[in-house]
Structures are given as C-alpha cells and as structure tokens.
Amino acid sequence: MTERMWSYNPESHHNPGTNLVGFKVQASDGHIGKVDEATEEVGSSYVVVDTGPWIFGKEVLLPAGTVVRVDRKEEEIHVNLTKDQIKNSPEYDKDKHRGDAAYRDQVGQYYGRDIGI
Image (tube, rainbow, N blue to C red):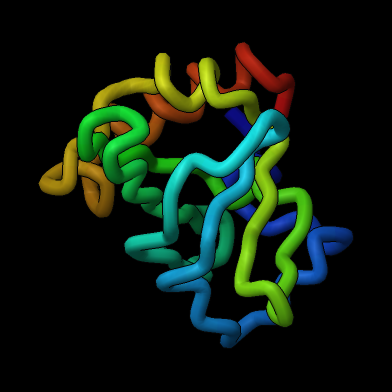
C-alpha cells in the first residue's frame, strides 16, 4: 500500500477545501451513489460513498487515489473503478475506518491489487 493511494491525484482537479459531501460518484461504467464523507488528511484521505439502492444501501470506503476527476460545476467525482470492483470491495466499517490501521490496510490491499495504486 502506498501513500499515493490515500492522496488525491493532482490531475483530478480536486482543490483542497472543496466540500465533496453530496457530490455524485461516477464509476468508470456508471453512477454508483453519492459522497457521504470526505477527508483531506495528508497521506490518508478517502471518500465514503453511499450507494443507495444500487447495492441495497451499502456504504463503501474509497481511497482518495481512486478519484481521477472532480467536477465542481456538475458536483460529481469520477473514480477509476468499475461498479463490480466497488461492489466487491471490503465491507465498510464506520467504527474502524478512522483509527484502525489493520482495516485501512485491508482496504488498501484490495484497491492496490485491483487497480495497481
């Protein structure tokens, strides 16, 4: 797992301080939900996506490195993942995602393997 996975790509047009909560999330093959939470912690940034009815209300944790484009005008973020990659991601655990290094490593290993970050 690299620090790059947990940092926004400079080419994504993400401006620090932009509140991404409520932005629509687009996978490489279509809409997957909306941003419920987003952080800008150096080396450990992420977004939590509420997938709504698409995966029966599942929330997923996406490392910031998966964000390839932020469109402030359309209030959308685009990620370099397919719907299936997101659907098969580790179960989101709202109690562990902030301070549990083992949980973050599990998420990081999944995305590192799948997308090579």
